[in-house]
Image: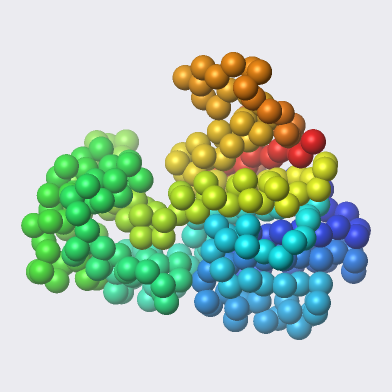
Amino acid sequence: MQRMEPAAGERYLDATFGGGGHTRALLEVDTSVEVTAFDRDPEALLRARPIQEAYGERFQLHSKNFSEIASLAPKTFHAVLFDFGLSSFQLDSAGRGFSFREDAALDMRMNPEVGTSAADFLECASEEALIRAVRNYGEEKRWRRVVAAIIEARGSGNLQRTHRFAQLVSEAVGPQPYRRQLRHPATRTFQGIRIEVNDELNAIEQALPAAFDRLISGGRLVAISFHSLEDRIVKRFCRRMAGRPEHARDSSHQDERQVRAKLTVTAAIKPTAKELAANPRSRSARMRVIRKI
């Protein structure tokens, strides 16, 4: 929250409302602060009610994907916050099918009212789509085995429930090297399927420039990522806005670049020991901040 540099009289965009913790903290800075929030999860509307009752017109929640920020009525903000990935509410809700800690229908949709469930995706998706989800998004090294097992299991019922699917993936992956045994063998595949089903990376690609365009001069964009694919998109966007090469193979000439922002810090900010002690789930978090010129 410190990187948002909150102050009286400012307007903020919380693009990932979740449980409302960031929104509430911003609203409590001063009675003149306003917050507009986005969250595609219908359950976020229920979590937002106490905040709406407490802060009234200073708070507004849009029940939409943050990829739709560009459709927001004309309004500018002093700072924008993205906190990507699953909220604790979604992860801890057994019935949503995001985790294999509890047995549930394999859904994984951030908005269960829209799109295709993970189970239906696994039953019907092309081999190319499965490879993209498991290899590219899940970064599973033994993706060939997992994809083959999924295709073989179609129609068997093993793709319908979290426990049965996690077991199928575990058997496909096989014995793990000692250094990887601390992570369940289905973790990467679950991540990749979730990203695919919710089209998460494309949403980030669309949302970052739309949010940046809504910033006032001097406004801050803060983005918190939880895995390398998210952080790579954020890093390249920040460097592009700062007029720097986006990656090591970026051969574009300096004259072709436009400097629209300043990197507040050049490297990603990692959680402190104190933050890790308070929230162990933050261990993989990476924060990047830019200021609009």
